[in-house]
Image 1: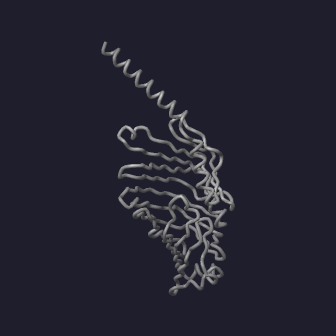
Image 2: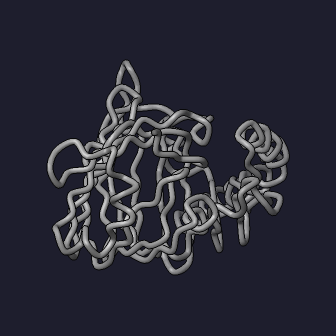
Image 3: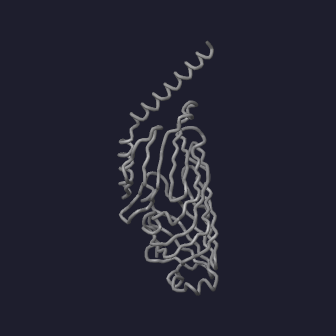
Length: 280
């Protein structure tokens, strides 16, 4: 009898779970989410294609997703999934999981709508060559592999925490910010950190050290629903060695007005994320 009771209980639980998943799939508001997202993106001149579709576990997904602007493609994902995690609901937490496959790399995130632990982020193996933003916006050829990891906590004034950044074997050429080019670089070692304090994000220092040159990028990072159109406020320091400067002397002649000390160029980066410029 005990075995029968256990089997009956397991069957009832399985049936209840199946019904929950079925009704979750049928009534999940994918169309409303897609419409709301389209409005937010359109304010910034962005589009996301193709249309969203529902997943069996409560959530939405895009296959071969493409984020674009009037300049062209910005980000392409072989798959993009956003779903509600079921197990945390039993302890009163609402957690949304995001997963993206970009080229051969992956991005995974967990964002909690309540509680102190707000977000976990992990990025592994994403090739910069698979991100069309650099070509469309900067006119650049990029190489390197992105890694990032971090956690954010929720406080009375907003989110706080840090995200570590690293790009292995970074190379770029043809970068142009408005009317000004940046020097071409190869074999760069990089590391940096994004510091989030009370909901505001800042790139504390992203260092790039390579053959004959040292660079340091820092400044405020746009956040929120209008990230693409929020004004940039960043600074790029370039410290070339004599041989490197001589090889790219035309670039440094154009940047001469930004020399703040012998061998040090401090370049102000303004504009927006989709139209970054070096102010004159």
